[in-house]
Image 1 (cartoon, chains in turn purple, brown):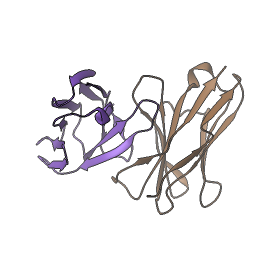
Image 2: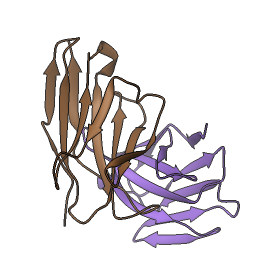
Image 3: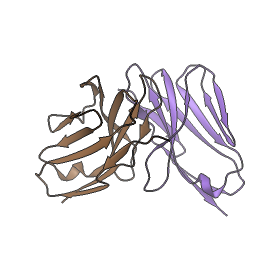
Image 4: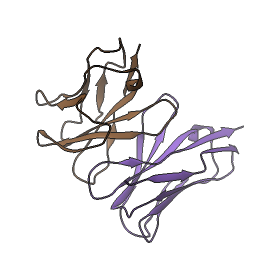
Length: 110
Length: 113
């Protein structure tokens, strides 16, 4: 079945440093969605990418969808303590289910 | 902003008992989902529901599980004969359409003793 992997599993950064998480699917996706989950919280929808090569920005966050629609990345510029959490990508193939990636846990130190 | 609401927030049950987890999806959404997340792991798809029937389910969603939309607002997940390994956070989600963003509730933490 479809598998979605993310690297790195963990990332510790100093506040102000940049952060990137990479997502790779074993199969071509129709779209990819990114979620943020705070400790003890639920996945919060951040963005959806649909088109091959698409790039979207939300303030300090930049999301990319690969040309082959099998990989994606999330880049955060100048991290802040409020960015702490686990970032999941989640892909949709032919059906409506989301296949979540393994997640990247971000910790930001002052 | 509209939210998906789930009750209870925490459910503690003896092994072998039945539990019903409840969800109220966002009111104009048509697609409903259940996911689960074992502590420290990724979110796993269980089932999707549209037009009063299951549209897709995972290998996890076996005969032990069932879903129902008993009225115009609620969406429930029933787990029969609970096992220790059913302990997890269960999230309900909904979306306006196919391939649309899915919005998650706060979850129900299920603890099987």
